[in-house]
Each structure stands twice: as structure tokens, then as C-alpha cells.
Length: 200
Image (cartoon, rainbow, N blue to C red; front, side, top):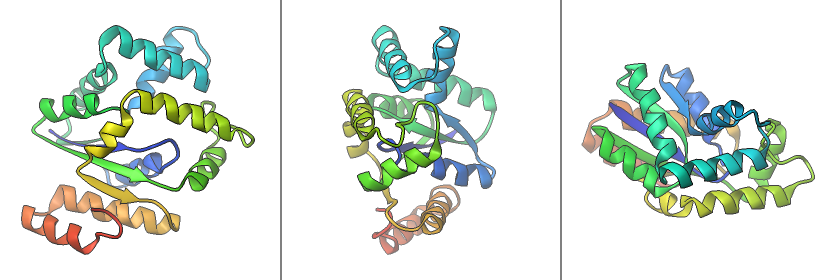
């Protein structure tokens, strides 16, 4: 199995990149869904505070790669050769995937904070900050960074910038997926070097 993992701060564009992957026919698993499922099992509303508490408790009880282990179980059950995983939160999770499958690529998606807040507001998910809650975004970032996201981003194999038009970002995701999924090693090096302003 080959796993392509997306890591990035809230609102950076991971969900959009995952949607591009789905449209290309790739299987996508969202790690946050593991937390949302666990919260629902406990009868909790999917608020940011509840999901953060559940995520922290799960990692404390089962280890820092607990969510990754549950996600891999779902990935294996799909029976697909390639699975895209949205929302890694730590280097421990990245290390777990890298050690567990034949091929693993970690992609950091980055975007300016102003754009991230705007995108989260427009997305309207119940665990996202509301239109007046920039402080909530900061708290969410601090929590996710405390799980080790900074180290995960530093360990990324490639970095994809999301700081322009949405159409451009989607095209760049498509190019990246093509490089990771359909080209030879030498072609990967050529394409990555050519696209350095977008991903490197």
C-alpha cells in the first residue's frame, strides 16, 4: 500500500486537497473523523472543545500514534493500493505510517493565517471557529502543535503552498498527486525542481 498524508495547520487547505484526490478516484480517510466518531460514541457534541478533549485523551490513553493506528486499520480494510490520509497531527503519526506501509509520502500544506481564518469561517463545520473567533483558531493551533504537528511539518517530504487562487491550488494538488502516483523517480525529481515555487 502507498499512503499520501496531508499535514498542515487548521484551514490550510487539507480538505480541499483531499477533495481533489477523491475526484481523481483515490480513497481518502480523514483522521479527524476518528475523533468525531469517538466523540459521538461518548455522546458528545462535535464542538471544537469536545473534539480537542477527546483527541488529547485518546492519545494519552493509547499513545501518540493512537489515531494513526485506527486510521491504518480503516485504510487496510479498503483494499486499495493508494490511500490519501488527511490531517496528520504529529511526527509520531507520520513515523507510524512510514514504518507500516511499503511507501509513504508526507505533504505539508501551508497558507497565510488570514486566509486560513477566512476559509474556516466559510466552511461552517461545527468544530470550526465562528466569524468572530480568531482566538478560537489560535487555541486550536496551540492544541494541535502540542500534539507534535510542528515536528510533523518539518518532517514533510514535500511542501505545497496555498496562497493564491483556489483553482491554482487545485491544479497544483493534481500535479503533485500525478508526481507521487504515476511517474518514475527521475521524473519526480525533474517535476519537483520545476515546480519549486509551488511545492518542493
